[in-house]
Length: 409
Image: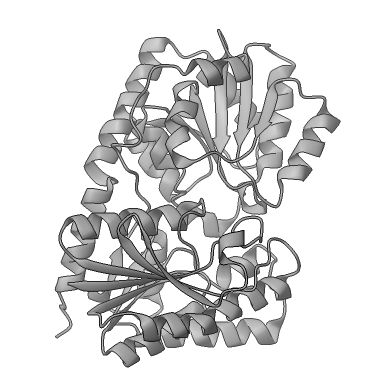
């Protein structure tokens, strides 16, 4: 089968969409399928295009044996909503050049957000006479409205019309979570044409490792319980609650250490808040390559995954859950809904109420007081769970079944 993957983001950028696209591409090629990627020049998260791509409109390259068509984008790291919108639209249009340069294909899988890229995917499917699969990782514009990012009513109405148009015109819809899958079916898409394409994890890269001495020295974490947050530090993560909980914990015990690894629009605010709170039990570290993360988890007792207390997030499955579980690192999940349910059912973590400082602090202290045997059992449960359900091999197995079956005909 010939498969084209269309996405604004792809490695060497770091992030969940980038990793998902890369791992799925690699696994498909391993199975003998022809894969091409259409994406933008690297620009995330700092909004800076690397020197080797500057001044170019288009380039075809090979990334780890995967043909990758890259085209120009107006990079906007933070800025206003309208600047980000301009960034989205710049690639939505420039990607057509890559579409014309790409090979004939059987299926085009287009990743959203941004929603507008779906137009490129749909028109490209007509140009290539291929099937159009719209992959929804975040419901837009609903999520942006709930977070207060989009408030213009006319724009919201137009975006909702575009959303429904793309759902209607897609051959199939791929949903990142069961909550999104249910949403799409409720919007009128037949159940047989909506399937799950969740975040997963490379269970070979992410395995349990002995404690890494370098990270242990950085943390001064010997004989301490280490809680690590690794990933994008944005508004949606509600990390201010984690810092306030860290203050409560600091007042009760010196034996807990916090590590924040990554970047994001809220990072400086969090650093400022930690200084304001007088936290001496926290370290901030810049983003590290994916290959370094198993070493980070080797010195981590519990991986923090946090979301704000918003109804929309009850259907979320944050991608950062699965690498932690694959390394036998239990998760402290500060959230509710779908993810809280499977973490509880599979006994691979501890649940705290989102944005509830007292409850989060209480659960941190509970985690720190678990016996080594209990912690090991929780960790082993997590590894077993992702091997069975969230390895990329299992996810691509399911994807190929859905790409080859058309129950509506």
